[in-house]
Length: 292
Image 1 (cartoon, rainbow, N blue to C red):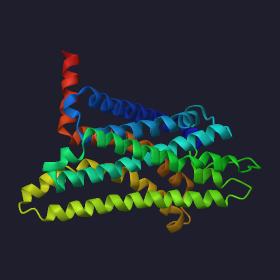
Image 2: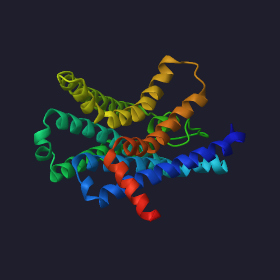
Image 3: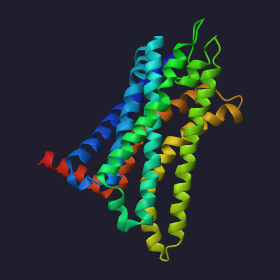
Image 4: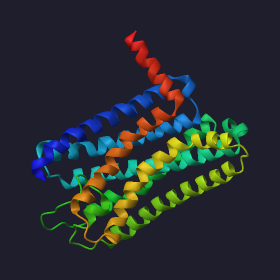
């Protein structure tokens, strides 16, 4: 569909621009506004940082393909890109898990919430999960580097992913398959843990007597549930398509893969700005100050 690339380039450029501006705005507000110096907003800043990293990691190849029809990439650049895409995806997944536990603590024990999640603990948790994400993905470039690629190689997506690159090798890639499967199982385990957190939250919510009280508690989780769905639905769909839809068009696969990288960084700042009254108010205050 090379003839239509320029028409894809316009919305893609807009999506990148809105995603980068939106996440930079979230980071700026949380850094400068003391009223947002709370555990929930610290975790939100981690989510915005992960989204920003995802956008910047995929930006060079996506724009080169759709704006200039430049489809080539060197092996080293490809390995570097897949490392950063996988790292920021793992970080985002970790942050969504932390945020689900954060919501559970806030609902289960609201009186002790601030004493349990102190600023020091939030920093420690952030550093531990960031280190784990990097450690988990760090072997990918090295186990790809040892493979031999014999012929002209065509990737399935507009960017480099470990599972996509390793399929093109004409040498033994069993190590890549086994380690890739281990990382995928870890990602699924994170999703299971998020689901368990929400089952426990639902159990607490059902125990609340008043209908108004239930809605109030659930409303505090809406933004996070949206973020989880926005992130995981494309991943699960992409993983399930080859198994359940054997004759699916490659165009559909490419579109879903692009949605996975474009939509979460775009939608998360919008969802949190709409649902979080504090962030919404701060944005409106800043806009009014500039107009004044």
